[in-house]
Image (cartoon, rainbow, N blue to C red):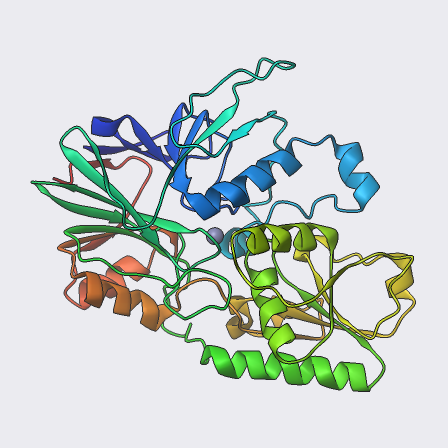
Length: 379
Ligand SMILES: [Zn+2]
């Protein structure tokens, strides 16, 4: 039923690609990070992720000059944490022009100027199944970033779940995650080694707020480096709750408005403008844009990275003053907890640590890392 073709998962029986990195005629897109989302002719996804992707694809289709004019070059991709760590997931610039339809199943059209196919979004609410032949498909929340969706495919022969990126920890800005029981589970395992145990989220949030407050009291601008989709909005929500005044890089501010359009309450913030910025505010900045504008370089600043990789030590934030383990992924105990709740007969792994598979097998779990040559007959 499933196969890996051209490094992408393909559901033969449904003619459906899953998070393919190449443009396809019909593809389920779990969430908006650049290591999962591409502009396909038909994108099947959740309603909120359609908003995120429409925003991202439109930005990506802008000429580079337009980015330069707004000072947002190279900051628009919202790349995934894992991909950035390996250096493999930098956003490839999309030149594809896209028009966006949010109505369900609106057919793809060709763009009038370029002849490129437009993107049509086929959106589904969480936990509202739809039928395709003998299969029933359901999207449900992954808790990773706004709109992130897992996919359940059911037939009388079994239940298959693809997680995409997920976390089980509660978040201020993403929908609460869910775990469904299944027979076969294909899960990400970014933090699939035992030393990746994140502190409680409230503890991390408290430390971020205290650090920002101290910097402001010392007359410095605290700068948090965070991906423009997801991590940045979560950081804004945490700091805003802590009473820290905020300014955000343009790409982050634009995505925050997408969150607001989806009903997520964001704290007050101003869009960073070099001509107007006078502090005292915490700045949220994309990690790909570490080179700060000249007016900021002339100020006293303190910098912090927000990533689970800080558990690996100082190398994770070597170009910043400190780091906080705020992650949008599941840590090692959460990966195990997911499997415990889903109770699959078979676990397939992708997007992460290959040695998580033998660790699971030692625990008596039938697990293997999905390799590119794998042909799967899951049901
Ligand atoms: Zn992601």
